[in-house]
Length: 83
Image 1: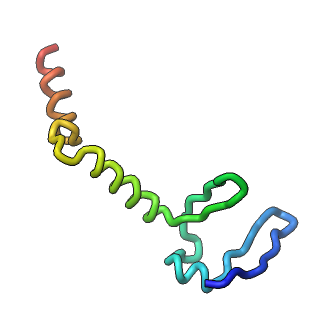
Image 2 (image 1 turned 180 degrees about the horizontal axis):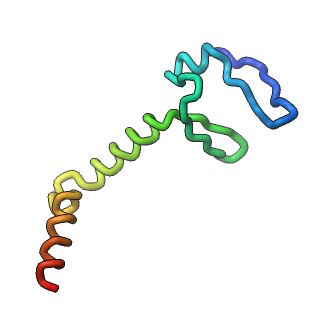
């Protein structure tokens, strides 16, 4: 998608062009995550950020059944029973 020029309003608001919102799947009133990376501003959907975090967690816990939430909760239950 080719770049477009936009203006920041007096109140600091920036409108995202409809074509960009449509391409990203951002609905009006939808939540996004805004990151500053050096001198660039990055806007991602919350769903995209969650999916990335889940993929990272999956890679980090792959092949480690003791690293699952279920295993963690089971261990906490065992500890509570011993107290």
